[in-house]
Length: 219
Image 1 (cartoon, rainbow, N blue to C red):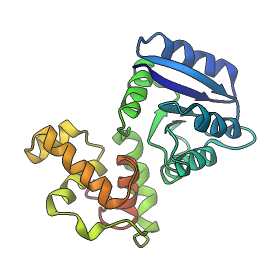
Image 2 (image 1 turned 90 degrees about the vertical axis):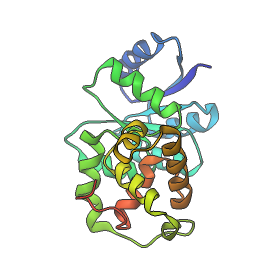
Image 3 (image 1 turned 45 degrees about the vertical axis):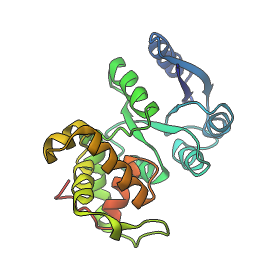
Image 4 (image 1 turned 45 degrees about the horizontal axis):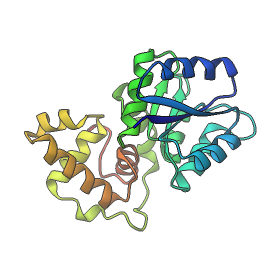
């Protein structure tokens, strides 16, 4: 089955460039293009693609608000287009429900891999991007758990898995670090997400930092 992608960027040349890169892949299809955030929300919820590739600065509605609305409506995974010079955007995007980030100066291979990761139901937690942002911004914003977040039910092993997630580790890396099989790790990750009321790994890590379950020095 082909991975369906919606492109949201107010620059036509940027959208065209991403379309060319993505549609060179046999397993990826671009199903639509949006030139502003409002259109991105409407198309994401109507077309239901697997992944929305979302720029941040757009007219009508910015990408952060668009991401928030898509996530709140149970829409597709959102991959944020970003640059290192706006870390505040990154953290806001995490809180809004983004599942991953892509640097605008990245490679075509990074783009296609990111799309596949999110389409598989995973999150793109590259340590070079999300780890330092979460560590910098989450510590002073700790808050109490929301309804449905059952932090007290995390087992010691699940807490260890959560700490590894906070460092941006993949399932394979967690398996190696904790001397577990990958199938076992997947089970633990699923239970962590369920107990934290998180839609994906990214949101689980944000909640963990915000609620003080994981400290920046641990990740």
